[in-house]
Image (cartoon, rainbow, N blue to C red; front, side, top):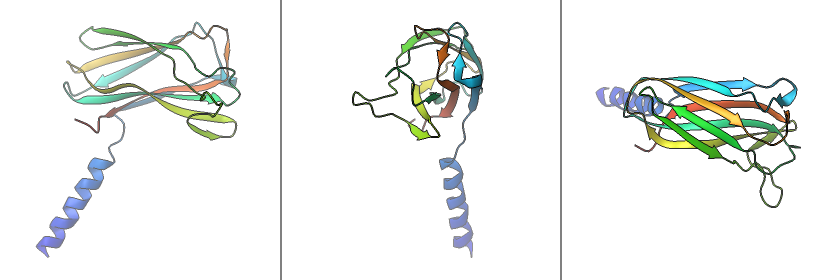
Length: 156
């Protein structure tokens, strides 16, 4: 009886640890798939554990008819300690052969773009991520949703 309870408890613990949900998840939806080029998106993230490695992911939902193979972004991350990290990303949404990346359904594709893998914040508190699309045309037609997801890293 004792071994059975211990086995069940260990299995439950393993299941819980494998199915950790995101620490943060927020999406911004664009009405009719139109994003004004000069509108920046701000995401406020509460970081509770300094030193914990996190994966920071951008989730992008776009029309399969989007005319380009890449979508250019500036991402500015400001930590609770005031440190600012600025990166430029050009996630490829289509292969050189025209195949779409991500999951496709109903004329749209959803793709996860890893912004930072195993990133450790030096201080707990509020971090912000600012996203700006610098696609050369305005308005940007064909982007339906953009989100930021923060998960505890699998690799520690």
